[in-house]
Length: 329
Image (cartoon, rainbow, N blue to C red):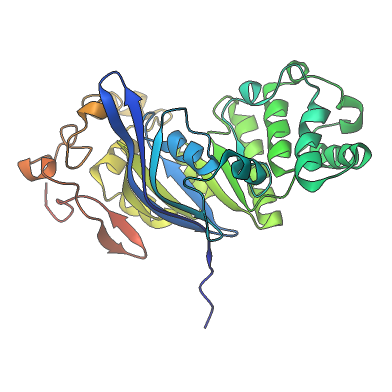
């Protein structure tokens, strides 16, 4: 019998509170998941659902004033409450992040060679000459042509796709156990999106890293990860193997996301407008005490507002938080 692979990352009852003009509000509410080495996990949801805050919490990069409770364990080490010096030893070393916009992730006043080499010198203690050689190899691996000649170039001298490849090289410099990619293809055209995704997948498989891929693009998630979490209002409303989640679409919010996908030629053929989810995403302070999707959901009844529904098991590790899953509505 195969041994169950130990979790690299364990997140239990993660809660993130932010200070707002209306007081303290919970932006992430009781999040739970695990991620093993070599495993790929997707996180999807609308803007404001808590995806990026979750990633920042995992990296210890939350804004000042944010309060974190619950547990985040990396290889058994508790990260919640970790001192800044300890976070600095982990970030860029055992865990790394590819950000959505490479121009904000790269320092505009330093050449890219220095930026890729920095984690190698900081965490692995390489000499300047060794770090330079490693940086060239990394840049070549991610598809930067004539890397040795371009080490002295600055971020603005590269295209958007090239800049994203450079940030991936930086993230992979020290061979992290965990790679977090937060909307890594949003600023790229379709062709470059596919190239960057294929590059990330190849490197994850090659190096045996765990990958957390955050995206609002359902097609990206469908083809890139083994398991998927669907977030709304700071809560995971559905999760499971990607194949099971995408084939069943159990939660009304997941159904709404899929129905609202643009499909080439669909409107022209049917003459119908693109479906939308009713209402708007409420402010954090206005989220209902029960299901966060209550009110926008066409199935809403009084009990939906009473308490957060528990996860309902649907088989194959697939769960959804909805008290009306079995109703014919």
